[in-house]
Image 1 (tube, helix red, strand yellow):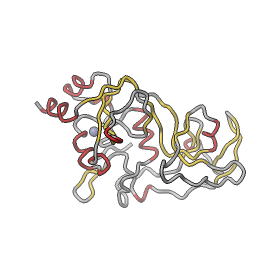
Image 2 (cartoon, rainbow, N blue to C red):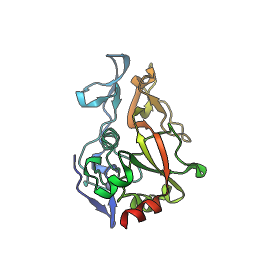
Image 3 (tube, rainbow, N blue to C red):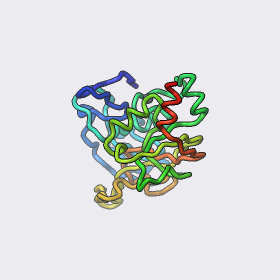
Image 4 (cartoon, rainbow, N blue to C red):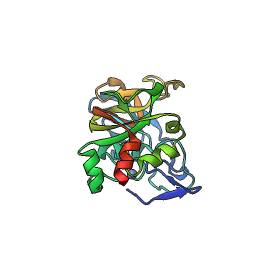
Length: 224
Ligand SMILES: [Zn+2]
């Protein structure tokens, strides 16, 4: 896993951003019976293609090759970020926090998300957005057009795996079901039978022990 800082047009490219050379052709989708029942698989499936019981879209891991594909996320780096609470911008794990980050965040994790209609992050809210470390938070807001329109921040005590987001396939035709352009890729819980018929592209976690914070105050305090 590379955490080398990469730049494009003078801007740092976030850890979770995919690069054009990382896109791989889609493997041939077949019907497969495995542990937990029937679902989709790759004709040439290998161990790394499956996680949480779901088949995952294939991507190479060669950050820095080609062009960054804003504003999407690399499915496997996003999954790593969610599994280990890595910062989505720099890839830093919680174990490498500075003393002032530890003081301000405790054992919690900072999440900065688009505030839909000005709403703060709700208890139990589900998300595909990785956490952000404190030093990266102002940059995360400034560099993201979606967040600049209005964001909310919270320190989250507990963020377990909830499921995946991806493209469901039809069990008979083995063709992807048309994507809902409004709501995007559906969130599928880990215990949902539909999981085995979905090509996963994101990990979904749920956010608990949510404390809304003022990012300006937090980062000013941090700099002091
Ligand atoms: Zn960071």
